[in-house]
Length: 224
Image (cartoon, rainbow, N blue to C red; front, side, top):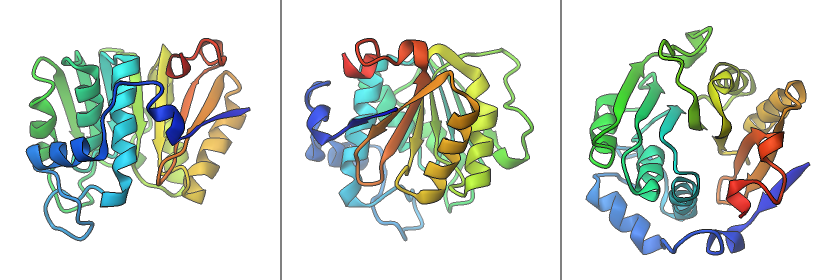
């Protein structure tokens, strides 16, 4: 069963961060809204609710370890860290730099709010990884999947990332309104009954995977 969260829940489960706060953060950290800008291309102005939620995830889940596949301008991890309120211990970023900006720029941006974190930035196509490079055996509190949105590639990213999920961790899958993304998630969940699913209503939709034994309505940290 998928539990759905809507914008009404957003202000119930976290301290207020509003659209104007998101816009100011974008300006402060050199992020841009314009989808065709050749700078740090991230999103469009109507998607501010997505970043409100990522701030909330950081605040609620307090992630000491974060993995993201598909980094782009680094905004998602930036808002997770801002919500957390302190520096995580370890951040792993995987991106093949398909978009016209540098992974190094995203790392520099994230480091301004995660100054004590070890940041492992891997410029490589995740589709060519048979498994996630993780020699330190880090278990991630939050895994963000936002790479190739086709069914097969999205499924592959889940396949290599999920084995590294902490026991009480959460996998954030962006653009869940995209049919291929949702189909990839459904396929992965059908093979992994130990995982449950939350749907968060935003402009593009986010599905959050977590272990069943940490996902009952009364126990899931996102719903407390």
